[in-house]
Image 1 (cartoon, one colour):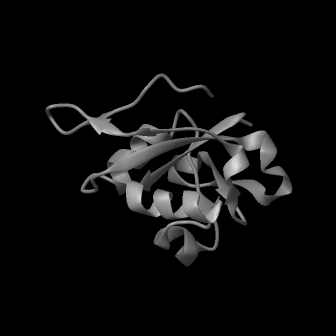
Image 2 (tube, rainbow, N blue to C red):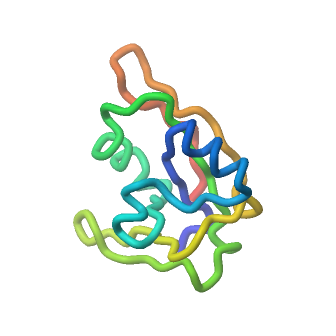
Amino acid sequence: MPSIIYKICDRPLWAAAEAAGAFAGAPVDHADGYIHFSTADQVAETAEKHFVDADDLLLIAVDASVLGDALHYAPSRGGALFPHLYGTLPMSAVMWVQPLERDADGLFLFPELMP
């Protein structure tokens, strides 16, 4: 499984998580009972599918090895295995956070991501 997983989050929600010392999830995560993540190969499609109309987004890289048994992989789009965290995300697992920018055509611009 990948050593780094990624979360897309709006800036105000992430700011609240940083203030709290942990990320408990976005509304969709609460509804589903786990925090949704994507691998490097999945995150661009996740952005286009679920965040196309959202602004002020952040891309968060997470060290999956820190999450232990709370991290599970389950099939989703096309049978691909997506990482799901059953619990809160500790800030100690966060490797970096950066704005998720768009180009002049409104397409997301992703940095080179590590798998």
